[in-house]
Amino acid sequence: MHILITGATGRIGANLTMALLAKGHTVRGFVYPADASRVHKLDGVSGVEIVTGDLRNKDDVTGALEGVEAVYHLAAAFGGPFDNAGYLEVNAHGTLNLLEAVRGLGSKLHRFIYASTEAIYWRLDQRGRLYERPVTEEMVSPTHQMPYFLTKWMGEELCTTYFYQYGIPTTSFRFATVFEPSEFLNEEGLPRLFTMSPVLKSYRDRQNPSEEDRRVLADLERQWDGQEKLLVQRNPDGRSCRQQWCDVRDIVQGLVLGLEKDAAAGEAFTLAGLTIVWERDVPKMAERFGVEVADVRMPTPNFFEFDLSKIRRLLAYQPQHGLNSLMDTALAIRRGEKTDVVPTGVRWGAA
Image 1 (cartoon, rainbow, N blue to C red):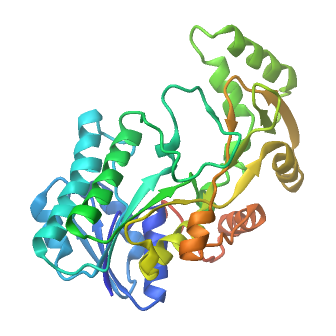
Image 2: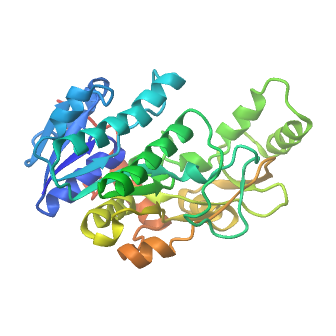
């Protein structure tokens, strides 16, 4: 198939491109002009055509769709120079432009796959994330935070509507937070999301801290000796924090299955894999990297996992990459070795 990928040079898009090429497909990458520097990731890769354009421009979108048989819509406003209106235009109206162009071309598209987000489950009226049972696809929140979460939900709703109303075979994947191995370690070679000093700094820098903030800061200061540690974070009730992420390679696995499995059409799936339990996994990381461990009870909860029974049943998805695989690949990339990951931010083809 000839496949369009919006956001083809991003952390997921570049890795998806390579997986699709390996299966014999060809790829047209649709790239926002401001992201043009990242196009070098795919320099010299046979079977890839790059076009630049803006999702807000109907002519750009229509031109990009000509001759393609499937679409992966990964591109979105996330950070960068966008206000709330900009997020709405790119993430919601941009998705509408794609769907309308597909409908207008009258072509029989094999699949339109949309990148949604786990944030579709998080409620505005609750502090933190505390789920005593696994989160299922039916547990979508009635409220969504503006701008990113809400506008991504709007895009998913448009995809569902265009499936039922116009017969476009859409599939939405709600990505868990993505681990890309080249980003897992900080400049000192330690797991960046589990180091103590950034948490300590954030509490030191808080303006008008609450009583609970002051308690956390005092606990952190008591354990800080000037040497970096990994931090076991706990919920307000003392239980270890627990969160499910997904290795980019498992994200790609799920996306490819969404193209290949007929049961994907018209469905939405949570796409997740690797679960971290802080009190179990942080000491293992600390031992591997030769640092000590600190332990603190945080003021907001972080305790959830996803129920993956639907994606396993309908798409035969099975996560392949756990914590050891993630760390092994991160260290290999740091040593300059070739791995099965296209690293984020590397300018391929640069001198």
